[in-house]
Each structure stands twice: as C-alpha cells, then as structure tokens.
Amino acid sequence: MNIKYFNQSSFSQFLICIVVTIFVSIICYSLSNLIGYHSVALLLMATVSILAIFFTLYPVLLAATMSALIWDYFFIPPHFTFHVGSSEDILLLMMYFVIALINGVLTSKIRGMEKLELQKEERHNAIKLYKTLFDSLSHELRTPIATIVGASDNLLQKDSNVSEIDKSKLIDEISIAAFRLNRLIDNLLNMQRLESGMLKVKLDWCEINELINSPVNRLNDELSTHNLQIQIQDDFPIIKLDFGLIEQILFNLLHNEILYTPNDSTIYISANLSNNNLIICISDNGKGFSDDELKLLFTKFYRSAAKTTGGTGLGLSIVKGFVEAHGGNVKVENNIPHGAKFTLEIPVEVLQMEDYKDFTNIELQS
Amino acid sequence: MSILVIDDEVQIRKLLEITLNSNDYHTLLASTAREGITTAVVHPPDLIVLDLGLPDEDGQVVLRKLREWYLGAIIILSVRSSEEDIVKALDNGANDYLTKPFRTGELLARIRTALRQTQNAPQIQKLEFDNLVIDLTSRIVTLDNEPVKLTATEYSLLVLLAKNDGKVLTHSYILRNIWGPGYTLQSQYLRVFVGQLRKKIEPNSNIPKFILTESGIGYRFCTKVDE
Image (tube, rainbow over the protein chains, first blue to last red):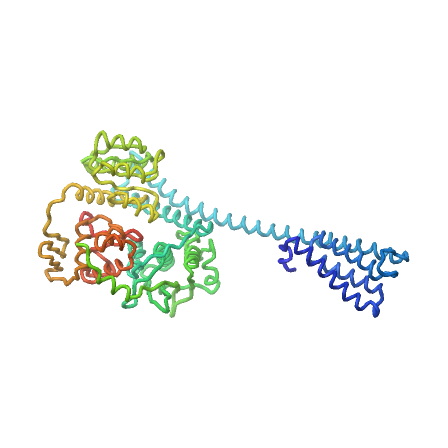
C-alpha cells in the first residue's frame, strides 16, 4: 500500500472524499435512466468502500453520509425530497453506514498494525545498530585502556625485574594506546558532527601538495612499514575546498590502507584535476576485497573480515559522509592486477591566473 | 627561567610541573583564571602556558587581559582544536599553540622557541638555517652557497617567515604585513607565493623542510630546536 496516503493532511482527505463523491454522483445522475436507482446505490457504496481503503475513518463517514443523502434526495422516487417510500430502500440506506463503518474501522485497524510492525522493525534495527556500536566501542576503548593499565602497573611495581629495554617498550605501548584512544574519539566526534547535521563546509584556497602531504606527515611513523608513491599532476592550480574535511578523508583512507594491507605493500596516491573536479586515487597492491565486501565497505560499523586490528568500522562511513557533505563522491573497486582502489571525486573552484597577475603587480608595503 | 601554568586539570598541572622542573624551569601553577592572573602580576613569569577551557573565565578573555600588560611569551594549550579558536588565540596575542594531547618534547621545543623570541631581539644581519642563508643587508639569499633568484614579494615573505623562525604566523598576519591591511582575505595568493618560494628553496617542495604548513591557520618557519 502506498505510504503516502498516511501522511496526507486530514483537510485534503475530506476534500478528496467530497469531490470524489460528487463526481461519481454526477456520473450516476447522467446514467440514472439507463441503470436504475438500485444500481446507483451499489455504485456509490463501491465508491465509499474504495475511499475507505485510502483514507481515515471520518472522511469516509462523511463520504458515506453525503452519498446516502444524495442517493435519497436525487435518486429515490419521489425525486428531490428526502422521503423514502419502500422499506427496502430504508434498509439499503442504512447499509451505507454499516458498510462505511466496517470498511473504515477495518482499514484503520490494518493500518495501525502495519505502523506498529514498521515501528517494531525500526526499533529492532536501532537496537541492533546500538549493540554493534557498543560492542565495537567497548572493545576498542578497553583494548588500549587495558594496555595502559597493564603496562603502567608493571612499571609501578617496585621490586620488578623488568629490564630497561622492556621498560621502554612498555612505555611505547602506553603511548601507542593513548594515541589510538585519541583517534577513536576523533572518529566518534566526526561521526557525531555528520549525524547531527552540524557539519558546515568551510571553503578556503589550498595548495594540493599541502593537502596530500598533511595526512602523510601525520601518519609518518605508521607509514614506515609500507612504501608510498605520490603522483600529483604538474602545474596544479590553487583550488578552493574545505582543507580540514578533505584532510580527514585522506587520513582515514590512508590509515585504513596501513591497517589492512600487509607490510611492505605499496600505497599509491594520485591527484588530478578534471573539469573542476579534484580526483584523488588511493590504491594499493594488497589483496583487495571480495565482491560482497566492496558493497558493504562504506556501511557504518562494517568491518573487513581480513584483519582484526583497531577500527570501529566508522572510518570509511565518515569518508563517505564527508565527501558527500562536500558535494563529491567516493567509490571503491579492486585494483588491477590486485589490491584495492579508492577514488574521490570532489567539485572544486579553481583559481583563475588572470586575477593572480594583478596581485603580483601591487606595490609592496615595505 | 620561570613558567606559569594555568590549567584547571590537576593531571595536566602535575605532568607539566614534572616535565618543566626536570628541564630546569621554575614552575608556577594556577588552576583558575583569577589565580593565574594574580600569580602573573605578583611573580611575572618568563612564559605562560594557558589552557583555553578554564572554569571561571574564557581563556580567550584571560589571554586578552594578560596581553594588556604582559610582554612575555604565552603558549596556548587546549583541547579545542578548531582552527577558528587557534587563529583567534594567535590574533589575541598568543605566541604559539598546542592541542591536547600533545608530546612533551614538542611543548619543550615550542617553549624554547617562544623564550628565544621574546628575550633577545638583537639587530641580526644574517639569518642562517642549515644550507639556507639570508643576508639582510645585501638582500641576497643563498642555498648551498648558490644565490637564489627571488622576486621582491618572495624575498619579503621569506624574511618575514625566517625572522619569526619557529613561530606560527596566521594567513591574515602575513597578508597584512606583506601586502597591506586591505589584502587580509586574499589567502589564495599567499598559497601561490608559498608554493613558488618552496620550489626555489626547498630541496623537496613536496616535503617542506623550511616552510611548514599549519593547516587552516598559517605557516611556520622551520624550528632548529627540534634537533
């Protein structure tokens, strides 16, 4: 059934009922010489029944009353009076209301059940989503916390015989765990910005090398296990975009590459400009994804079966949300011959060099 | 050297006290804006580390109040990482900023740079950074003893950045100082000039060593204290 009818305002429901009843009555009136007034009664009754399928109880009752009165006044002899001669006609007249009531009540009951079912399903989905979130969150929060607690306990033990080398290893682990927690909070805050609709795109001019190198530098330590190749189109102009947003997108994609490709894999980043669209590709020569994984990758909380390290399944859905907030799109496919390939396409404003020529001619201050 | 830490979080105060004391700084602590300002008046420190999220007053207001009379360095330490907050703090007179969580090594480096800038401002005739030398009297820039050809604008930009070595300069600050107050919003041209300048002085302009980007905020000339 068409859900749209549920949302129609009651005023328009009443209006449609009145119009339809009058319309059918006029047609019946013009045909009344051919079909006889008992058939007219049945036709009008059928109209009320059909209206009952789509509308709520009161508009349907109005249609029933109207058609009963119309039938009585215009069709039952003597015409143009409310007088009803035969008992058969009185019975038929009463049947109007019975049928209208039964139809109306039944339809609204069915509708109520459907609504309930829908709500139940929505609630079920929400609970499932929250459960996934909390499962994944508590795991992701507890793992680094466990590391911090365990390592610091070990270091605090007065009579421990942990070697100096192991001590510094424990301290390293504490530091790594803390930064992992921080990254998780960043992701949660970003997700919240997206879902609350608080995300505002702030456009400013930016230089492509800065944009690409910023996440690369932030991930410098993690990247030591991988090879990185960056290729940026020559003479790339200055473009206008939200630096913070795009930088976070690249960071998440790059971080994913590091997490989900084997050590010594090569990660390729390329940036090109095509028809005022910034095209950034991040690809690798790792294992790539199965067809099923490719479909689910951008879904919230989805996590690749490939590896269990880190991640809440939020990273890529943030990527998708941010790219779309920026009016662009992101797609993923398998790389040839193997590996994965993420392509971002983001509409940008390009700096016109004529404006820039004027700027160089301005007299300097000092 | 004395450093005043104004932060309401006891863990951060403890961490900074240990870190600063072990690096031979005399550390003063304050947990509220009022306490911080009083301490700064009674024992003027050489540098103030200020948290923006204080319980009794907004850190930006505290910063403005301090800047009415305090000439020493102020470093902002805050969980607020939005670019607007940072640019506002820098415009309000902060020398530098760090967002929590931060590396203590990074903080110490920033403190050394800020102290160096506020303490001595002698007449320098030559700025030297590794293989890059800027001779301010003859206006000649050399890289590995080879002269670098710069336009007048590129030279002014390089000198402005290099004179503030280690300090982050906001986009609008640079634009105002090089092109004038009417050009503070023309950040696109600054990007072009920085790009050109990098091509001329950076060994690898993709991984800048001299002119570092503070995304959404401004630029920072390389700091030598990290070595």
